[in-house]
Image 1 (tube, one colour):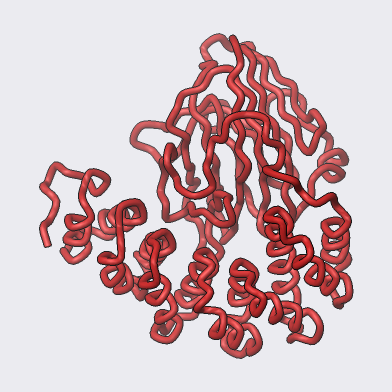
Image 2 (cartoon, rainbow, N blue to C red):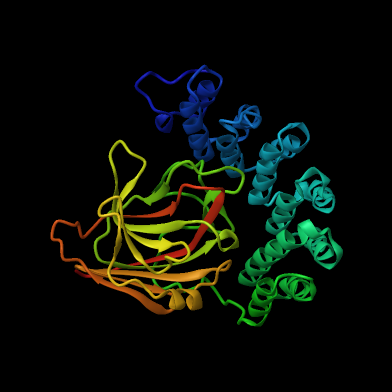
Length: 398
């Protein structure tokens, strides 16, 4: 296969050139970038080369990200084969997660076996994947675990059931979601999980896209208009999922919208996996040349900083009056979706969290730019995920 010219980057290369790069002695960093580009331009012909990297600790995540995005049966079959052939549990758990991201129905029998037999240590990722796939057989297994499953799997099953029920209700499947939520309410689980199930069960059934008031900034299917290291970002259930649960996150990562914006109102929903982790929404920000960081305002997504305005990489401190801890504790839904509104008008910046104003800040430094880019973040640290969905933008007159 042809190799890219020395002055050509993976992002400029064709699928054939990218596959040649994967077969070469190129650096792991270049091969990871080639995988990221294959997630955009690759087809079935790329599957064997990507599948061969699943056993490589340095490139497995990048290869899986590409296989998650490539349509057709071949990519799903390659990931399913990885369950049998990979020897490291962490790599197998990653493959299982990718099967869930793809909603790979053919994987359900294998995932059912793993979910019901916790001896291999893969029951938790398997039940999570079943919740994402959400066929009747997959959901039946989750209900069975909630009723009488191994104790180590019951809590992951509850989280999977909540995730599946939420998506089903948004997609018109409230009747299918009901037994899942009742199974959580009846299970021997921590009170907050049973309360979350009851709150979702009694909530009004969504009639459309949540909170839609402006133009869609993210279409829920592709990363068109966005750029970042796709090792750390993927699309699940119409949401941007930042981070990973199968490996630590070595540095802050940002997925950036391509346009510069000045005065605007941005509405979106944010969720942290199991209420843990650290994310944020950058705005009026820029990438720092030659660095992975961004500089600019951030609406914080982390306990206890929800609803606060942080100045990322510039003054490195919170700005304005921060919301009281008691208010944050009352407003935040730890493992559920939270509504954020960011409004920028001239020097004034305001943040709302779940309907309440939490920050009202007026910039006094004339040197601080009043325009920039929007981005979503996952913070460095232990394995974690922050999810972002329903991004709606209304541009305002200056």
